[in-house]
Length: 82
Image 1: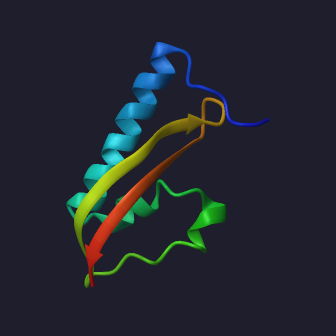
Image 2: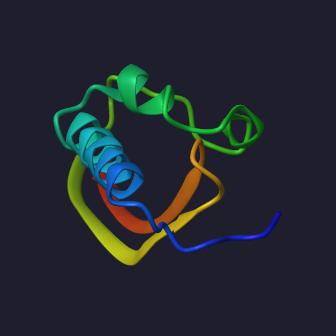
């Protein structure tokens, strides 16, 4: 099944809340929490959370693409200081 537009209001609100929580976790340095939102297959491609990392900007570049009701993808630019 390919990407689909998020259609129902309930699913869209849940997705927006999840993405906002993920972004907030990154901005506030709760990396373990944010890491839990990353799909397991992509975790090995993602850097491990570290105490020496500080997020200085989190900018959403594209609206989320839904992959059913349980998964979505969003493109963001994350600027950080290590």
